[in-house]
Image (cartoon, rainbow, N blue to C red; front, side):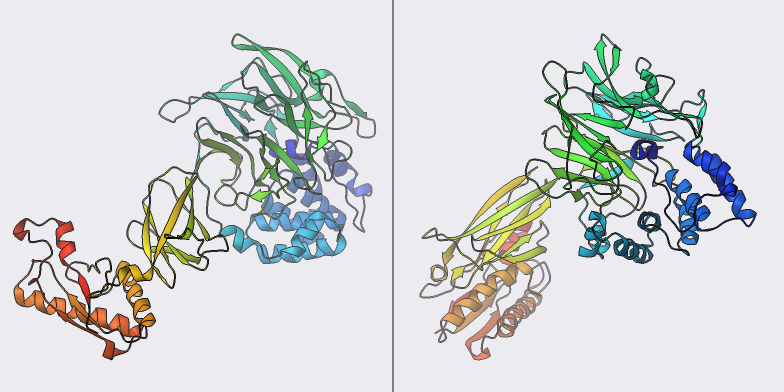
Length: 622
């Protein structure tokens, strides 16, 4: 049903080598009247009767495309392209193939499309990055999603939350007659209340806004007293007459309503509506000054574009403005939603490189940046559209037919924290470039490592509310670790101040942080390796230096066992240094068991105290 509000009564006719004839007259009439369910049966009868050609196959495919029956559309596009077709047919075929994750075959059809329409923005985007799918699939998710119980067995879409009320559009009203486009009832506006528990009440109709025609989606002003919503132009007695098909052609229009008490009234079409083209899917900025909508009005780049218009203080409107090719393509863009910041726009597109069908994109309108595909799990190989976001509730909502029907989903942001590390000389404040900066999780696992840039910076994005640490090191400096406190973000800065390496060298020993070992183990840990690398640096800078390593255990276990364990730890330490290029003649070691405890706590030691006793020390022999 979302195709009604994306296609906006706009149907591209075939330009194949085949054309309409006496045999197709009845089916074509149904197609042109947008009665696609009946049209599909009529074209199918021509196929069954052996009267099909490239035109019939294409029309049958387009019929299923308009109903978003990807399986049938794919079948008949495959037959249609056995004969030469127009560029758009190859594009649509590629779209349907992607809905079944047949990306290699989709690329072949996109190549044919690009050859026929080389100047099309969609063709250019494909040729610039034909193998974008793996990168898109591998993109880190920004949301978790779940299906909401407010969905029905009919089409439900256009969800938007204002205060605690979720408004959406649905074809669930079984008491109304079905619409010939897809054999579902006409659309109505519904509402459901969000409880403190996070559940939604049973949906009810917004009776004061609904009519006998299609109604919805809706947008509501920040004060809750003004609504703009989509409805048929028939509601305002506006239509064109198609004498050939004996048809009254209505368009999608936008209507304005005001609230008195709990009831909407004073419903009027807005002044920029037209019976020549459609306007739909309104979204009002929180400051109430700009209305975004989708339309196929003149000067659109594609079939349907996203536009905006100024809402003046007196309620009148300015001149509609196309959002341009940073948003729109020669395909269809629809379902705009402007976020609370008045600059972030979410929208659905079939013309941009996506996973299949309609994908959701976001773009910052304030800086001229490119639109970004929101990736999985918001987007899938199917139709994903009508995304909205409530900053107050920190919740997103969208519609998708990933389960076979247009259903409503909730989207919860995955909290991300950007950690900016700036590496500096602790004595002089000088920026340190080419320093190794690693981010480490609370289990001491290194997540990633990079070298600091010309500004001494490294940025990492991690999950919120978790403990991390930054390890920074550079030749000539004493590497160190810096805590990253738990945070909900969105950003935090760590000043990694490194002392020159000579601060850890005394006349008698190399002062490192303790090289701790795990209980009953002798292998070098990641934290231990980070400290030992400092010793390697000192010994490389002082070629005559000879070191003796002493390894110790805690007091658990027998004396003999601990002596053997500490000796293994000493050998592990020595072997690590030799593996880093230190001459074996310059490093030796011995285990001392529990004979030199750092913390003499007997049988009452805490785990932290035991860990302090499991250590290595480094004495200067020469």
